[in-house]
Image (cartoon, rainbow, N blue to C red):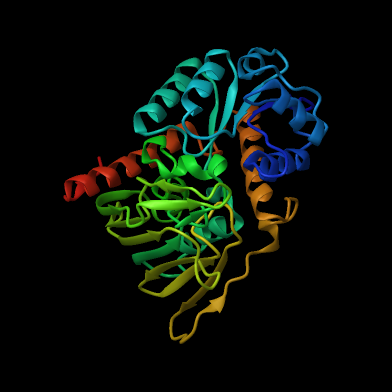
Length: 372
């Protein structure tokens, strides 16, 4: 299919502010020789028409069911809030569509496992948006570690912040961010930024073998700026994980809610027998922020910048969000054409959901959990 363009239907596109608007639209337009956006479906036809008009898209479908049923659509991109993921993804796969679903894949492990099993059974490609895994800095970090920059990895330490909407005392607006406050919705500090970062950490250092954890809700309420309401919160604003990776590497993670005081919201250090590498960013959303690498080895007494080779960035959108999403879509196209498995898959998503479920079990039981 060298000349074929994959036709995308986007579920959930709000002009100017949604993740699909910020990342997916510019990413797909940068890959216009490979992908064509045929239309959008939102919760109402009027909302879909407004989004289609704003971005010059050919069509607004009456609803999600019409988009999924359309013979024009090859791939259904799901960018809505987490609770409806399961229903939409399941319907799309059963209709014979490939799926790009944002992370978290499901509201909990069971949903993710069922979606992965359905995609496998139906022979459809399910791709999940853990795009930190394809960020240039993470890919180069993986290369540096594999190439022996730090020698044998002994330990890794990660301290990060969840940003303005996760685990914070104040949220910008109730409609967009209020659902993050209820842990039952499956979208919180643990599942979103920690999940994205775990997906990247597993790529660089390998999977987790044993976990101990604390999940705490130290801020029981949050103020919604737009309505002035004080809203109850059950989602954690402190996530503490300690454990051992499959290779024996010790790991320590502490995510805190809210924004950093000084704009430095990510400290991730990898310590080895020969050297150290430090990853920095403005928040713990490794999938969304500009990352930087510093390192030192041997007798060096300071950390020095580790420049990412230009080859990791050339040909992609320069902005972080559409750049990482474009890289992921390009892998998806390659997998569909060549039968490879280079894009983060539903199976990969299940592996991360299993770690999150183990963190939750460890926190609830107060005991160390051994992952199979």
